[in-house]
Length: 128
Image 1 (cartoon, rainbow, N blue to C red):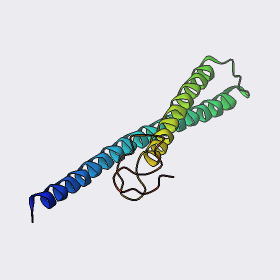
Image 2: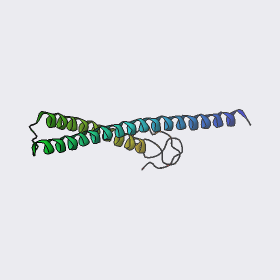
Image 3: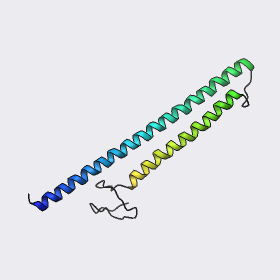
Image 4: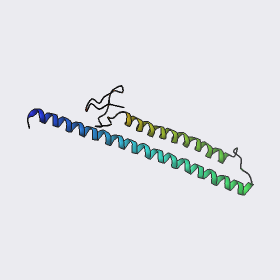
């Protein structure tokens, strides 16, 4: 193998390794975001369960439930807070997924650095 072929082979191998590393980093980021999303969903579910339990107890004791009750108000504030966190987590997951789909060549997987590119700078494939 002559020097020119060796350098070309080495460059292709390095590009493949870099692409694989980028993909691993991206998948790790997505996994972390999805774990946060699941955590936020669990917290919201727990608050809804607390609300149901509290309403049941108040109905059993008093025969009625009011949203003016301090316990109910606290739970409702927690629900609103956890819903906002859940929405933010969902947006982060969606944004990361969209960014991934838009920044890689569909054929060779090379990162596309120019958002206006029509063709991949590595393999020449059209970018959709």
